[in-house]
Length: 282
Image 1: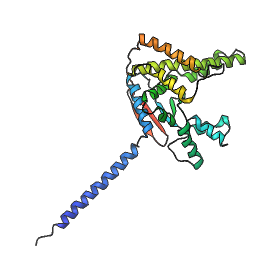
Image 2 (image 1 turned 90 degrees about the vertical axis):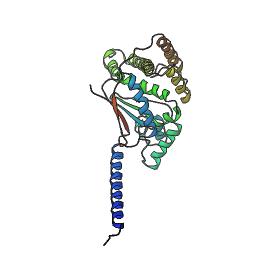
Image 3 (image 1 turned 90 degrees about the horizontal axis):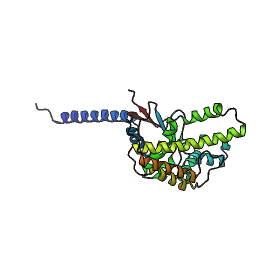
Image 4 (image 1 turned 30 degrees about the horizontal axis):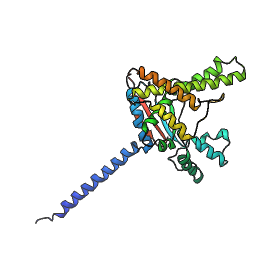
């Protein structure tokens, strides 16, 4: 007696479905361990990868977090959610996360109305508002200047040195004199980071006076044509542009020596809203 062919076909279909099911489970597991990068983080990873490839950035991890930015703090204050000195929480909210109607509206308006900024912390974290990516658009080199500037602050331990300077070096000065000197120190550190950023960018193969162009754009984009004042934490527009222009003239005559790059790995955690670059240990 000849058996009909359909059981074999059924078995084949069953095996195929089982394989597809196992494949789907495997894909789900892989995706769980490799969450998709938002477009802004993908741009950051590419920029940081290029900078690290051509610069010695040390052995400490560098973290990147994209947040709402300082305009969110102003919005929160306007809504009465916080007092001026206590609004940084809203500036650092995760713009990719859904909160509540009011907080989500703060994120939306921050993205629409915020501007180019960047901050770094003593522990090696760099924060950039999501609006900066929209404003820079495809000009990733200008974003790279912002990243390089913040890396310079981290590498030079500027927060620590400013604290040490205030609490030890000028401790014996009068209170008004201390305040004056601390603002001068802050402005000096910003110019120092500008110079270091230009060197980092040159080593990474970015041509021209790209960080000068980025600074001019950032000031015009934010409408900031301010002058240097006694209580300015950053140099005013004219002083800052003059200083970086002078340094680029020097850099063009004396290009920076090449250095070994920094090998490392990237890891993105959507739960932490953090892209980490961890240098390989030699």
